[in-house]
Image 1 (tube, rainbow, N blue to C red):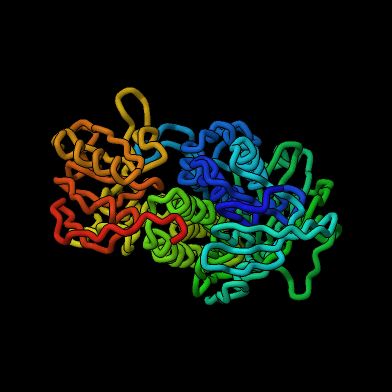
Image 2: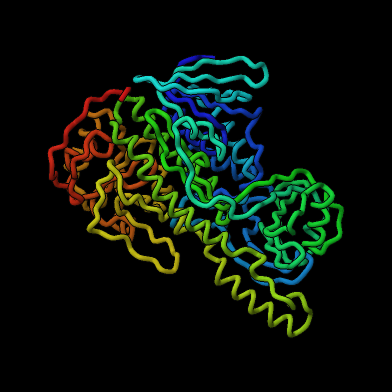
Length: 558
């Protein structure tokens, strides 16, 4: 084991793996330390959303994850509301989380219903192919001491007890809800703890899929007084998950009681083999700080979401992507100090918006739809079920049609963005995602005439999207400017047809994380200094320089 790294990451869940892949794909030397003996212990998350799969596409592994889909990517991504799996139907929500594999103009990769442990395995296997990444399992964090030019860490092998001193430039805590790194930097979580007590029960039930008449779905919400709950297929070999949303006071989960509860909830008498039971508490919490000097927090270490909407794991991956390219810029010498300052400023706004959305989803669960008589046969019961079904569709559709939240989050302020406040984003009151090339937003997606995604042409660095009416003099200036600063820049020309409704001005600068950093008609000498973190000078949105930027000294140790 080496003792010197550019970056050390504590925790090899999805957020830590995403950060490691971003760094490793750029040749940054990093150590990924995980206290468990493998990845994939937690079976909670099951939705990999369109944004996360787009990152996997950048890394070249989206197809590998698709191949791991337990039931195939064509399996119906339907959420079915029923009184019981063996009872009456109430409502159906189709194409939940945009998992349908048909091509969509708004994104290059559909969502996928797949257990989190399979996603982690695919990410781990890819990380192991990157030569600058070292993974150490059964290795726990002990202590960290910051120095002016780095961080001294002490790790411990949990098997042998051997202590491992390590020196690095930066440390990132991706170590989850009980983060030790959060304590190191003195951060505290604020918000609401204990919104609900939850169990995620994984069980095997041969024949359960054929024992009901509601059709294939990824999830069934069961609305009944015995055990209001969520249930659904999770993996091959008849493996299912079960999550009660309300338990009797003092109820204790054991293998026997869990099987009885599932039997009562479904109304289907089968042998239920309990494989695991994971107790957890749903909370809405966010850290008061994400950084102290050279130590950063990502994922559950700095924000916790109720699980409804499928945001938590996917937001952690996005954190790793955002911080990854910024840390790489520092290590490689072309990034300035404002780049690292921007991490918390940008991500906190998104975290707060998503936590609020997840908490609103959590406020209405399956037990809130029960009414006496809902399971009565006949016309009276049918009428009641229609009314409840309409209420379910009205209240829960936004939880599963999440594209505006997943793709529509825009960074509203940042020291490394040329925010064009005079151009407001198009409002969408009906929760539709409307692409915008406004600075801070995700660059709009376009399918090209040859079948390629515009995103595939962006590369690992910055990309300048040049519209049909952009002058070659301006793109040449941009390329020369990037070459002088040692910043990778790709220029992608788009046609008038490709620009319609997507790219409103001739030049749009896209960051490595695919968010728009600047846009205008004329290239400004100060653009790259601003977006690389070297200057707080203002750069006019139409491309004329308003202030002469102060170019900082490119020092990788800043």
